[in-house]
Amino acid sequence: MSEPNGATFDVVILGGGSGGYATALRAVQLGLSVALIEKGKLGGTCLHNGCIPTKALLHAAEIADQTRESEQFGVKAELVGIDMAGVNSYKDGVISRLYKGLQGMIKGAKITLVEGAGKLVAPNTVEVDGTRYTGRNVVLATGSYSRSLPGLEVDGERVITSDHALTLDRVPASAIVLGGGVIGVEFASVWRSFGADVTIVEALPRLIAAEDEESSKALERAFRKRKIGFKTGKPFEKVERTETGVKVTIAGGETLEAELLLVAVGRGPNTANLGYEEQGVKMDRGFVLTDERLRTNVPNVFAVGDIVPGLQLAHRGFQQGIFVAEEIAGLNPTVIDELGIPRVTYSDPEVASVGLTEAKAKEQYGADKIKTYNYNLGGNGKSQILKTAGFVKLVRVEEGPVVGIHMVGARVGELVSEAQLIYNWEAYPAEVAQLVHAHPTQGEALGEAHLALAGKPLHAHA
Image (tube, rainbow, N blue to C red):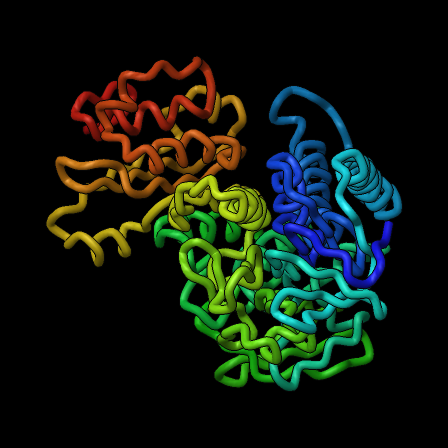
């Protein structure tokens, strides 16, 4: 519904993605009046073009691999092929159900939902199609878009972004993935499971370079075994269209050819032409700068989610939205520790982490003050049942808490919730070692690693 010009709210939110709608829902719980402005669909990138559809594709890919490899479990099955129409129908069905649920929540919460493109026209006012919405507080939550590189033209057919990749009606015979971060690695994993020949091109020295080096090495070993090609330390130079697809030139003059090129070089902040700079909001390369309480330099203007420098994760934006609503309501919430936010790459194998990498921990505390322990999943019963390989790696300060947890293997993304509790509660290995982990579960690996680091290894070497 819409309100007339001059209507004033406690909170006006520009953007209805994870950060924006979380702000809105928590704010109305706290008795605040809210206008939520969204030009597209509620749920934003995560629900419609990011987390949810990609994870649906990854699950379909897992089913394909399980079918292909079923005989090793004594089950005879044959993978006849991949029906992309069926895969997309399954994926879209998941999105649709979640979208309807979110629409119902917003409607039931008595939030004024404004459909249309908004622009900040005063420090406390957003205008949508000529109508102005004034807020005692304004929250900027306009999300992100798929970035490209200078001179690299995306045509949506042979050179595509993740948005295009999510709606492909076929499995490409071959693909080059430009970017070895989370998005690139996940799509490479999907397409390989679906039967495509895939090569990743990454300018940095290793895949998922933001993760602990041992996690990168483990993923690279797994990808070699899966026959996913990758060229690391090789910046992109140019792409040319050919009769059958694309030819990509990388550093050193090496060329690669494939049916299509996926540009997965990260996401940029959606802040252009929205009036932020004109209203005095301090920016840096398109990002909105805030303090630790998510306040911009303009009084009563906050920012959450992908437009704030840091991890571009839906659950980060969601938690920031809750924080800002409570901040506006005067509850003085605890500042979010960015290092305490779980990170997961949902490839095969999965990679999950929270806290500091070993290198960062040594940099912060000194190499002589850091102890690590790597528990191989080969000693875990459930991992043997699943036929997965990987590890749980702990990073701790000597005589102090665990400051980093890094995991590689099937389903380790489900373990990261316990890992973040360990990190955020500044737990010592001995404190986690006394907790009982159900048998047989992957979670036992966390328990065993802490037992070992506490000086009493059982199913592990000291």
